[in-house]
Length: 382
Image 1 (tube, rainbow, N blue to C red):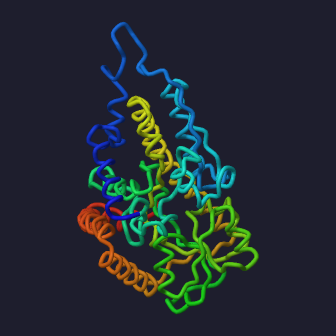
Image 2 (image 1 turned 60 degrees about the vertical axis):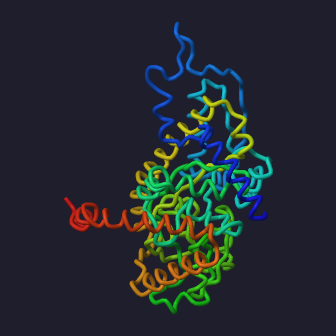
Image 3 (image 1 turned 60 degrees about the horizontal axis):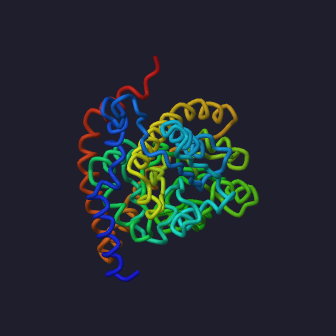
């Protein structure tokens, strides 16, 4: 797409934003409740536009994961309830309508109206899309949500997605992830060289700089590749999902932390033309359901990962912390990558510089009360 066409599309989206067509999700919570939230005098129903809308949602994730695929189901259930059955979104797992890594294309082309995915899968289209989800040594879940909703992040990433005829909404978070499953120990940075690993997004680019042969596979394709020796290592999410996918059956060493995903955000990708065709009440209901699903997802992961970790320990899994040498090498490679990309891409630079300023601010704050409490309390048993 030419710069002129890209700018025209961005001007269109900014006009839509100014008209209230794509109001941020958090304010939508207030607009959907309480007195004066749409109920007319005499007890008329809050949903005044009775048009029935039926959409299809393509997920990047397998049906068996009640956490991450379950978030799309929770979203659809809440939207149907809020709309009193007038706005129906039917979710489909990866591979049922389209392959998990092609859902953005499906939304862009209008094959489906919405997808639930991680935007870092699509950095081949634009490297800056990764900031919608999260980047190596980036923001925690709380910091990422704060940036998107209150730090201007959502407006920045929406400008990027406008080039593809898509508008995005936060759709959950896993919290900090694990570093992945390895068939052999990796104690030094040199141990990574020649390793074949499934890892997407900018995390994969950083690992590539450390000598790893990177592959990007959808969730349902990882176990067979690991079992057959096509890959030597993989990352996914954390104990609960990883146990369900069976990685502990074919790899012994479970490393942490997932420095490439300290708090990744999932997203709902919506076809912009379809979005603009919705009545305003339906847009507000969509956003309200998305916020509820986001909250549900983060709480769900925290509630199930702790007992899953205990089960994995009992099964003989070896939990290993990445060495400081590996962490430092990855840190330097990550920020070298960001600076290089920013030097040659003005669009990337705009997002990166805003994100970096926010990161510095957040890190100073979290290094105070949050870190002091964690350093003292987390290692103590009652």
